Length: 410
Image 1 (cartoon, rainbow, N blue to C red):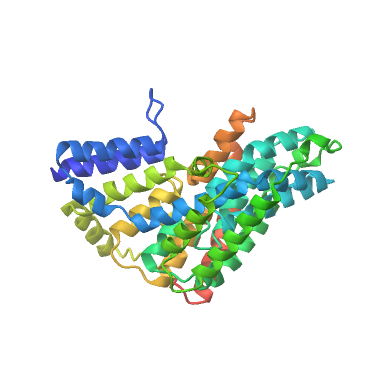
Image 2 (cartoon, helix red, strand yellow):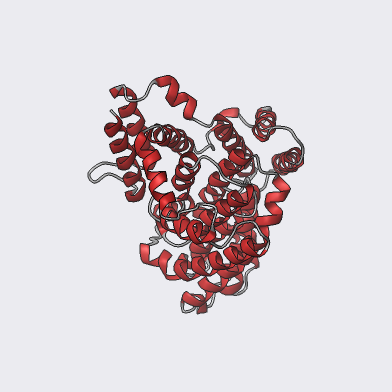
């Protein structure tokens, strides 16, 4: 039975790398769900063990943050932000800078996957109205959201998980990871400006009146107060997931917005992916093969808290299985992490997501939502600027982590 568990584990992460099953319309969440069903149906894993493997606080926190982000969406905030950037940008370079900065700031405070989900179609239409090629700006949205989300413990799903695993302080996390995240945003802009300089050299048309968006000020004020309350509560000793859930519950109390409308803004597929990966990875971790693998790696000098191992490992794993599955895998299989190593894991796995289209869920969301709006973002489009920006940002981040003594070089 151990061999069966190992086979399911390997097939699951191969599915994470491929992103689909040939001939079937299965995404990563569907693949992970089928894997859990196979483990439970075969009796290889007991239902109680599968439930116990799921990190409920992480899922609750992620769910609650999605509710807060959905509140911003209901207020028309994302439409207004994109409209303002498009309207105020007289030149394409300014437009690109505005998109990268906006994506980075919003993603540091809200779940980056929800931010790009909401902003991609709006940005696609707005840029097209100005007669510009939408691709560099959509890439700026994806890469900027990844880079900016690295700054906070609530910026993306993998950071949320890492923060829960290590009980990392909100402001300590920000102090360590924000400087390299800000530098990464600058690198994103410069890399896109250089690699897409021909497309950015086109003169933009005057912005039409259709770009204007109506904002519900009451709903926006409600979302803003909720965000400030979250940041305040995260600074206290209150369990992070409980604080976020209370704020989300208060947002559902509305005479104007049905609760189902906010709940509909939750990325249930991402929550399902997380939950199923917890179960699959924990099942593998309980097999003798997992222990043998760790012993084999340790015998060859693999120390996960060292930059010489962690940086290339996160780069490879994030761009094969994706950074969310990679973090689930590492935090489940490796029993002990220092706080410095967790800061490094969060920062490096997030920045690594900018290398290729498969590196992060945010990239895939942007590509899929852009395609629905008639804009095709290819593997090469992502890689052209993604490779240099990622290598430069990760090198700078590694140097920063080493300089402040978070992790050793070797």
